Length: 382
Image (tube, rainbow, N blue to C red; front, side, top):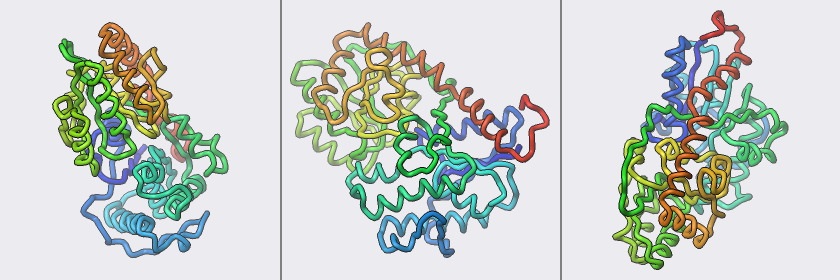
């Protein structure tokens, strides 16, 4: 079976799609399946000229809004690039972005299309303060769910909570298959270490949706209570300067290290003790599973896929979003009792190895691909 994995931009950054799809490709190719990756280069801008049409809604009523116009132009660019670059047929196309899925179905209508919805662009924009719920942009982006439901042959998503999020925008949400993300265990190697001071780490894009302002305020409470710690922040983004200034205002600059963007944080992560990220929303939260595979204790907010990964006080600690006091209390527990912290980390590692293995994802995807394939496999073991 010849399969194309259609991404949005190239898989250059860690986390989510980027940390999973290339390893899926490697596993399938090793098993004798032919799998290729395709994406839109970031240098391609304003090349496409074709009109964009949707069957379930009229895009004309949204035209003129800057975010919508940029989205539609990116759609045109994806059409232009795909027409120019893809000169062969595939038995199956698995898309990982709405634009990729809709363009592939437009250009290859007879090819089965699988679409994994990994996250919500509209929710990210709302949490980052760029749009309002119910706005033109919000209505346009949520209209795409029903368009995808009509066009593609199978919708997948990464958590039960995100399937519930999509339910109001779909006619048949029960048809969506949930396949949580998986990770190549060989990339994550716990390392024995003994830090005299508790080392917290967070890895994310520095945007309001990740709740890092809450994290810094929780750290300030820990310092006021006399608890020694260091917080390592890996990632970059538009609010980095704002967070650095907040650290200074909270008298935390000596306790916090801002590293900026790092290509392979999983090589760095095993040397720390606790992964903490108080996100305001997460479809899955891949970095929690990655941290668990590095044998770190987990502290997160009870939102989206994080709440499906962490059972509170069993394999991590869950706190409500926006709650500085609850977050500080959870972090304090991991500081004062290293044995408790290790037991949480060990339980998280056990679950991640069992539930979020790449082997499990590959097996589930094979079932989906075979069920939609017009050409049954000659060798069922492949």
